[in-house]
Amino acid sequence: MGAPSQSGFGTSALGRGRLGAGSLTFFTVSASAPMTVLAGGVTTAFAVTGNVGVPLAFPVLTIVLALFAVGYAAMSRYVVNAGVFYAYISRGLGGMFGTAASFVALVAYNTIQIGLYGLFGFVAADFFHAHGGLTWSWWVYAFISMAIVGILGLLNVDLNAKVLAVLLIAEIIAVVLFDVAGLANPTGSGGLFSGLAPHNLFTTGVGGVFAFAIACFIGFESAGDYAEEAKDPRRTVGRSLFITVAITGILYTLSAWAMSVGLGPNEVVGQTQQNGPGVVFIEIDAHFGSTVADIANVLLMTSVFAAMLSFHNTVARYLFAGGRERVLPRVMSVTSTRTKAPVVGSITQTILAIVLVLIFVVKKQDPVAALFTWLSFVAAVGVLLLMFGTSIANMVFLNRYRDTESPWQRTIAPLLAAISLAAILYVTATNASAVLGTEKGSSLVWILPGIVVVAAVLGILWGAIMRATNEPVYAAIGKGGPEEELLGAT
Image (cartoon, rainbow, N blue to C red):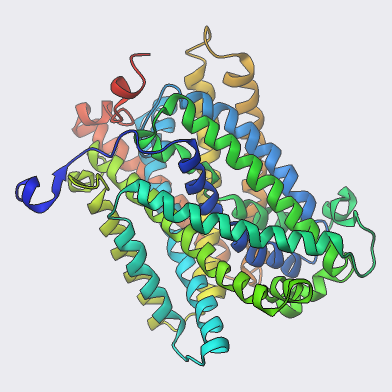
């Protein structure tokens, strides 16, 4: 590849000590994308399921995610690796399950990242047509954003964190404005607290509600993917995870409740079905004026962009981790000598995005109903499966450290998380038709979750092949992180 001093490539190490808890939180909350959740996830949950108890689903899931975070944070004190699910599952359950986790993670994070290009392209095309008269197709905006994300992915990770910080703060301000407008100006009928009443949630459509709601949180768990670049991974990863769960859980609950109150509990389903994401900007316009509504619309675009950038970085690090341990082609572990970014992983992710988006363009598929919705569903199933596996791995691994980890950390919380996540995964998979907007007999109902199953099976088979043909590589699966340097011997 040429000398590093000439090409800028050729190392196999990420930038150490560049990210504090705040920077990690910007990555994880940006991946969850608060403005995108408000305008996309919450409105769609109301509209598709017809369930007025949507707001209550978010605190319920926040409790589940907090339980998951207990074991995850505890394990972060022992394991440092850029592919966190892959490493945790490998160290807890063995190499074959680890390779399966690696394959599933690559499918899950690639699909959510690439699916977001469809949403971004649609929102941008609609906005610039309305405000500038431009008639460009959605895919033009998608490829422009793809180029920018690809370039940023090659730069310093701390620069990415600064970009995400600016975008995230702006979109949270917009979300808070909507929440204030809704809660301060209740309308319609049904009662102020109808959206938080259990009997309104646990009725028809509850499965679809949880499926949509869990998709809103995807990305919160990615703090560990940056552990090798954290200033103090023993503390930073866990701290960032709990902060992210708290921020997103509170913000999403308030936002869904504000939508219910502002539009009216008995009217919110009809309003979201009629106006979709537009209800957010209609509300902001009504209470703060058209200029603020336009700014909020722009912030929806930057919210989606921030999520795309965050997931791009996550995918690049999974590819880096797999390449470093030779689970994937070794070239994937190449980083820039100047920026320490995983350049081959980043470029690979961009190429995958180009190819997949092109397929949807050529097939003339809808950017939101097909590209975004289908791939987001695949991602939701994949991440839930990874979280379930990680909870089991947490119990196995942490019980080796009975002297330092409490029963709550090593057994009780991970077990409760595993049971809860298994239930949510079942509900999500069995409510595919409601989430996808298809008939129950549609082949998509089993093809899309089947992609995750196929990835897991192929990963297990690949792990078995490595165990039979290359025992030294197999034995090192999940152990490639610089733990001796960053954590010290444990």
